[in-house]
Length: 196
Image (cartoon, rainbow, N blue to C red; front, side, top):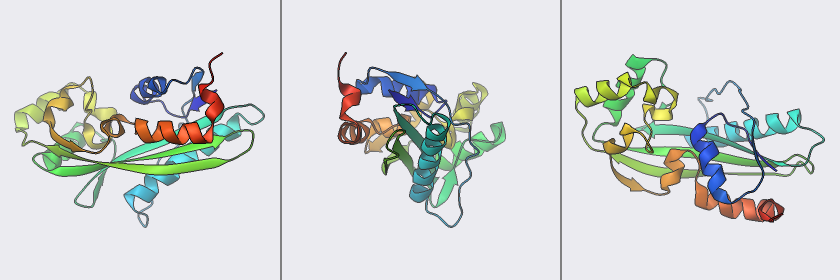
């Protein structure tokens, strides 16, 4: 089975697109702190591994592959995590308005039985059109930005109308770089895809 160490409903729906039959959701619920001396890419990879190892430890003795992931948004060297409150969400969206930022997602796979692990980072550049303060405040008022890195969602969400250009994997911005994850997972655990 594939165990997703995330509480993100977006990641859960993306994992189901991979064609894996048996998926279990078990959020890691760990405090996710960025290390200031590490790059954003290093941080998301480290946190993804931390989540995967944590769930693997909790499920010791079982068979399965744990998938850990962590996403962050970076603009001009400033790391935008999930907003602390509505003012923080507003500040982030003002900063992103009319600019290009990078979405980094770290992905880790951990085999509970063999303790093998692998990880990688995917980066996608996203450009916002200029936003009015009214648009930003209306969006923040929906509550939608509050559980998202960078204070916006790109799928099934009004945040989609802010995006004018994407370079890289769209699904990476949603929460998981599906193409690279699929290829890596096929190499790491081919039997996950065997049909019953």
